[in-house]
Image (tube, rainbow, N blue to C red; front, side, top):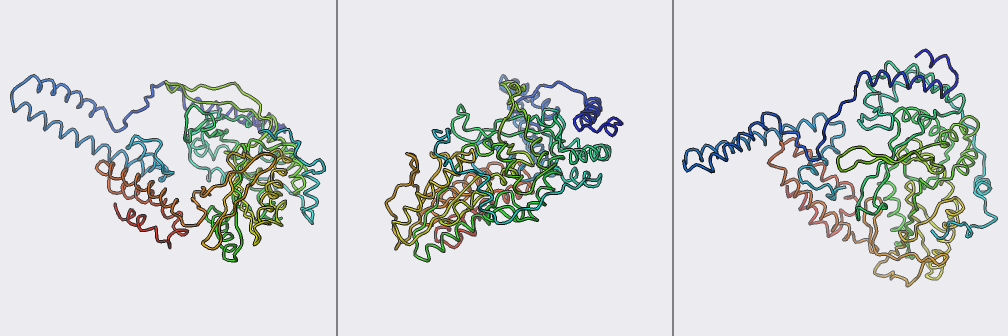
Length: 548
């Protein structure tokens, strides 16, 4: 890899490294063709397959014979074979869990496999921008809302020790990008590639150029729910080159340190933030609502849904915002290089499980949600949003999930503020090239026995927001009266299905596997029990938890 160290051009240096690495990779792991079947049973070993053939022969003999001894021997053989297959099944699933790097994921895969149910429930007209105020400029707005300038970032060079640490902390995965190199292979070869990677990374941090060959991602559509012929029911998963994860982690580490040292991120943001979680976000939302209700205020929440938020990020505007936050000079150039000239293609499998793909197309906007840098970049892009509505509401943000709480003692002012709030946020999103999905944005007014619901309409620019009585918030179903009846009903259905799955697989898995599956199932309960555990309608839930 001598050419890697002698050339100062990042792209040439990385190309030399990758070409050498791929040469060794393909020499060590030659391509082999094999036939893949969709429902292959891994526990059916060659001896068992041979025994099954013998069983078929014995069946034909037994069928054409009236000798009771032959029929009896056939039944004995079938019983013994069934016991052997059951033992092999138990051993197979036990080994899967023992050697698994992600035991919870493996557990759910076992349940889906054994129950043959891969869908089991355990887990714009405004694009012309005319509504945006002509006097509103996102960058000018930043200067108005922040009273102090941010210090400029300094990109510290890396060492071979840091490279080794990042590779060691990569998750062991067999998935890969277009270059076919998985993180599992990279981790195995870490001692041999740390020096050239350290040199390349330092050239990246010195020049602000991200390697071109790491800008190609394959998009795999993963089915969520609903009509399988509707593209909207599929989630796009970006498969990036594994080496890109190393470079992105190093850059992320430096950006994150700058952001935390300068307290840049809004305190209302809970997504992809250190020492934060869905539980903290949910607690703050419920606590704010309950406090307002206790103070006899009218309370409502706007649950906003953005149209493909990560895909809509405008690169030019993002670079300007990052420059304002002190991410200037080489760091700014590096992010610009990372975002520009990126290409992607769609990959899937045909009916015979052969890989098929579309042609490469340039992605001129957006950030990859499944990348290391993508979520952090998106947080910076929407970071000034909470300040636009800070005077008339409370905000809870979890990445692109935005929930806004409105409270007022006067019903007329409450209605006025709610509609004014929708106007403000719609204009902000439009000015920042993001758009609300009005069909999936909802308003819910919270009520008590003394505080009845107001008959009101929430709309903006002829777009009316639906009023709802319950909704999902970060895995928790919240209803307008805070009774938790809807959430507990849904949770009961899920746990009933899980109990059925446990009963179904109990005879064919070991006790250790069964215990692991049991605790994996009832994480559904423990995740939200702190919110509804004191209510009177939880008896059925606790009964189910003891059922098995």
